[in-house]
Image (cartoon, rainbow over the protein chains, first blue to last red):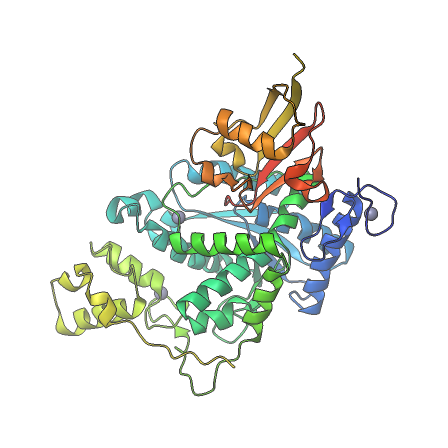
Length: 355
Length: 100
Ligand SMILES: [Zn+2]
Ligand SMILES: [Zn+2]
Ligand SMILES: [Zn+2]
């Protein structure tokens, strides 16, 4: 039975993926919390007196985030006001248990909780959307609506900042996906520990768990006896992300440092000055940051409200073109939307220059 | 008959693959070689895991992303699949793959 690498004399309970160290429970807690504190201070994620909304799903990441932020805020006097913000997609049975877990978090960590429903924000529940678009496509809505729901909720709560539970594995996975898709604009953004800090770029979002391994988050929750909720999405999983995740987990098994290396690669990528990236503007309809005139959520909503729910599933440039065409030519037919083969004609060719 | 009694537990969503059972006490039949976790995984596959085996197993081990703890210690400190199971061991499988 190995002893703790910190030479405290205790029995080790975990092998750290980042360093290979064997740590006892107490030394693990200390290392885990101190590293997050270090990330928070080194990257200046917060300023005193900020109100921070923790995006809370009841899952492992947000539960651990809420617990650790509460602990660090007290221990190091960050002077933050912490609140929990949850989104209820209105999927029958799916959020009930997770929202109960969030309510438990609220009571356990003594933080105010705001739950916003898709019905409140968009006028549609996920169940109603599924009825229109089918199970295959609903995760497009799920993701886009969720992203914006947090911002709308944060604006409503008048918070200064949103903290999300994205961990190192999540970010490495996103880097990998953006590389595979050749999505330079997102590749540049996805490793940023703070986004939305620029003018007109919405409420800042921070990722305090950016350098924290998924394994350690789960182990931390287990040894701290934190209650969290886990489930599969009851609808079809996002296949693309699923493949990237499996690849990453296989690589991680061979060498866990691959996670940090992929994040580091993502951070180090410089885009050539002469590469034209879609510049970010604000949605003309709702004001949310977007690379198009209309943000994806508004496109999807427009499709739903006009009875063309498949509008917006797929490449956004195609959607924009369709909307433009429809607006200016006053087309009534949606045959272009239905025609699968029109997708390829509108794919934009982003020339990738990696230095 | 000297069977080997073990407590097998599932968490983090792994229980969803086992009829939502979080704890199972099992008796492993006596055999010539010692019971290792590798053998236990085969036993679980044959006796507890009825469907979607690829969600839990990969090769002769668990699927990457499933954590294993033996008596509350990371199995990576205990020789992983080669760990020799002792009577009344508590073996916990926690999935990190399930969302929340
Ligand atoms: Zn120690
Ligand atoms: Zn979904
Ligand atoms: Zn919009």
